[in-house]
Image 1: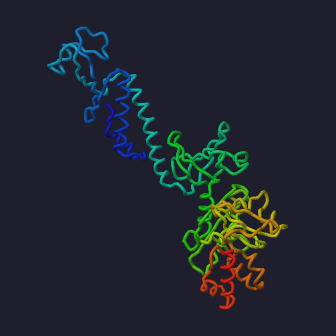
Image 2: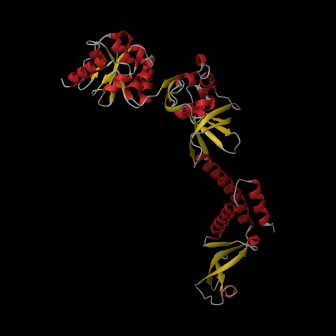
Image 3: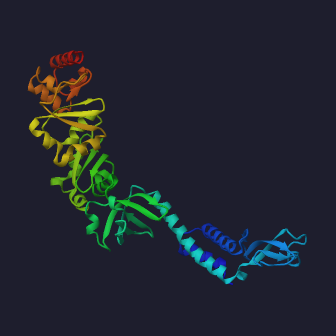
Length: 403
């Protein structure tokens, strides 16, 4: 008989499996195959002599040899056996019917492959958010998906249609290499689930391309995408001497070129993140024609000259849609003609009626577009206002808030 120990040793050495995994799979397969053949409860004993223990009913006359045993034979295994009782009958593995042996062999190999895939998937489940590369192995026209052979692994990755860039499925070719980010695993189909449209894909591409992001000098705070069209990325640096936007963009946008190429020409806006939601909103819109901005309830209102509304919203409204996704709140664009003073807020529009342009520009340049409470004297000093002007501004804001 085949030396099972050597078989196990060889499997441990050549496959990504532990000895315990192999033995557990073999035991389960043997018990299942024998149980189906004999249609009774079985046990499998592993050792130097591997045996299957079959439960047989003791009868006077045997009509079903697979499940019944005569009293005379039963007493060989249990001297107390009587008619109607059950006895445990050991059957050496090599004595099993040929059909059972073939079933065990085939199922064992099948289950080992399943277990290997399960272990590989468990490893990939710990790598969600990472980028992998894979060669296109199969293109499934039936469900519009692509199966990739992931590099440096035995795993297969699946790109569904909604995880590919627009028109990418029509152009994809068998054998070409694709990058994608891991977003999950499919335990049923044994696939690593991949995406090229997820915000994390862009984030990881930036980490790969921009050394200052990878080393932590610049931090990516938020990513918003409309895949294949446009995206916005909010960046931040704790080092005040560093302009995080300039670092990421590079000279004439050269650092973003390889990423845009990977994303089929997707336009990438890099904006400066700010903990102040108003400043962050204005930064996200990236438009010089913003007059003022303020928060009312759970929305951000941005006021612009009427002739610039379309420009601020962007083609197909993408600029304001992405800016809203980036900051996590709806941004409403208002024309100056539509604007009326909001309750409990004082904006630059009210301030510019009473203060010189130099004061208004100083406020705007420091992101102070509106006030829903009195500013402190220190905060106005910090932006360069003199004491007299600062006190006058505080008094004006207090008066307007109390109206």
